[in-house]
Length: 363
Image (tube, rainbow, N blue to C red; front, top):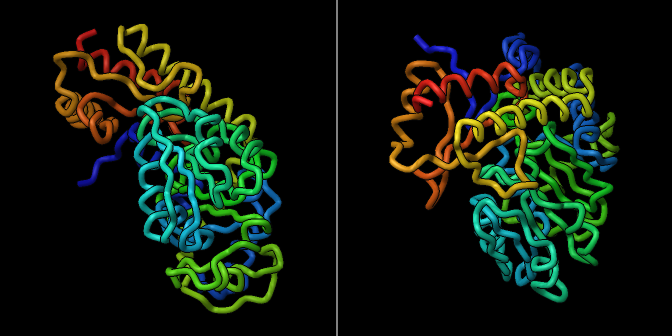
């Protein structure tokens, strides 16, 4: 028997009830006019949460990692200089993907847990084709100043990973100068994993690769799939069979968020996250991410000396049905990652995980 878990790790958050219910509805055909209407509305709502008017805004039929791949394969020409701000695992992954596209990658390295040094990134090369950075680094729980990167990028395209920020903290793609952005559904949007909310502006689209190495993620082909006329009833061409249930679920989750209001949703994430972080510090635990740049939706906390990090995680899971995440790389056994995202971004969820941790740690 599968138990219901309280998922407070960096992975899937407990979905909103509306999104879960939508997954259980009878399936529409992927060419059904009703599904096309839902796809159009979903793209419209994604424009709102992205803070953009980009016509090419859509849920890619794959996880957030494919969103990353789509961002690079469609914009990186062989030999392009790509400057990547690296302050965690997903900045490192950006470097790998860009290199596979034939880029000359300049990685601007930062200590894990530190915010991106905007001046160092902008001065790393006099004329890069692309600057790339993670807005909310899932591996470390730190936020970086994307608006400042956008303001100083000059002619470079700015690619932004918003997987853990979209629907949880402030995000303004157009105002911040984001040219290409990708995200995931399983974090603050509170929808099961499986789609990558994606946006690309006209400036980036005009500089796109004519024939990307990925047929599946080729935006030249996907434009006809979603309807080139701003996703609002434009003529469609067959590209692939859409994951209908996932799109319907995302539609429900976005409707729930926008009914509550983005400002209210962001405030709810902030309240829950700050309550958790204050409580952890009152317990004598130290937070990992740089002060002033900590994500409210994803808290990273240092494992106390002498404590078996994996054993604590296992006890939380087995005794309380609470799952928190481990760190990554050299911090795998030294950091816990605790997510309060989507439906879990509530004060009672923060208090629950604090009470469980106090019990397990004997504090």
